[in-house]
Image 1 (cartoon, rainbow, N blue to C red):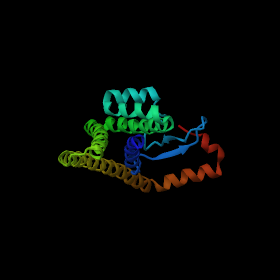
Image 2: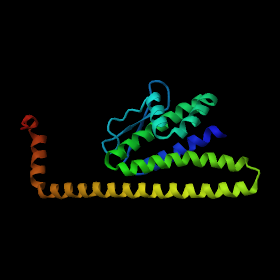
Image 3: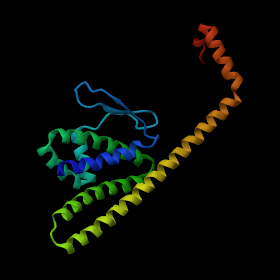
Image 4: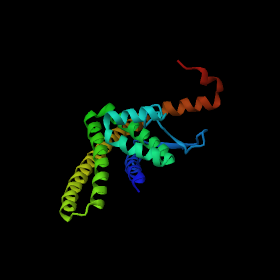
Length: 204
């Protein structure tokens, strides 16, 4: 059961990432026969290629070392699940890197959240294997405290997403207003493109 706990956390993180229109995605088939990679539109990540396995593991060693132990266990006991988790982690790291570019503080908070997620898994396993009622209660309180902290970070993440969406909407409104102001020019240009093929080559 341990193998799938870690991947569940990563999957939940990806659901949070892709539940907002800011980070749009498109699945494509892989020539290697693996599940489709994720590529990102202009409103999402620049580039779109997944990190290599080595780069993903190195990033984890530097930023979330607690995850490396889980990955080693998974690689040994379930290689297929390990491969899928590496892919998911790669996308998560791409997302975090994008966040870092415009909000370093939020990036640090999200890395902390991922660290706390790993810690919560370990505490949950300890609770399940602890016979002492007193120890179970103490660990349960610690788990609740950690989950509360994770929740607060995720809420701040959503607030950041809302702010980003608001900025995008403002830009879209400005573009629509500008098009209204230049309505006749836009229509005339399209009219000329349709009836005069050579007009398309008359760029400045």
